Length: 393
Image (cartoon, rainbow, N blue to C red; front, side):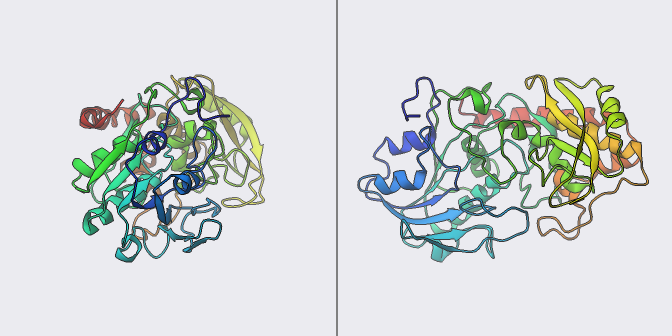
């Protein structure tokens, strides 16, 4: 696949490297193994090959620069890239943002990370932390824009509430925000007052309706449990299962698409879910054995989520409906996961993930699913207005 694929989206990194903006600059790059172009060339190699550009530092997000660290709350060490002779700093270590020493001598910090389109995906907060550090130390930042792999049209879910901020949620945005990482950078920097010196290297030919497999770009899994575009589509809903003592399919080949527990009858559960007639989705009875994480080595009953029309599909609604049904099937067996989660020890993981304690309380007292979804509407409409000035496409 060449970098001139007809009709393929042109990435922000292509636009930046096609200009002379980095000529004569000492550059730091925030990236991971998914920071590739349409021809699978990595941003680091392209920077090293660029005439007059000095690559001085590499920064990696959660899961590591090479995305080889499997789980949350497993810190990645600093190191060196032996092939390129450049220091590699972990921003998921004793520090979550670049220090003064890490930034010293840099003329510009470039960020090229693939987001997933969900509030809790941490790469957007690594970006926010980099903007804060860069503002404090006087280093300009360029964010290379990339597609939102699940499109930019839909907004879904409640916004994060004050008091529930964490590394999986720093700002009051809905679970499915429908923005690109460049658009989020503009919002974080301007609306939420980070005030770094920021440039966006925009994409060309990207449209808000496009999913990842409609862009002409390759899919490289941005984190260990995001193997396919199918995973990304369901993720804004089934990531809530990280806050429940039910398997979200980690330790299987279909993480976030398979959900279940040892005490579930898969046929009865899938039939009950299909009776909801949720838009764009079919629940197939499934039995699986996770090889690690929750219920490792145990046979779990549940379902696989098959998205049959992703433009009708509502992932957050679907995730809420699944948790609602698991709780209803056997309230005695159903349980919320205890802390800690992302180093937060004073709040339940489900509250951190959902962005407040409202969702948990609604499930606990049996609020009808329709009322749960209706409670998000004001947040969705408010965010739709808030994001408008920051949209690029």
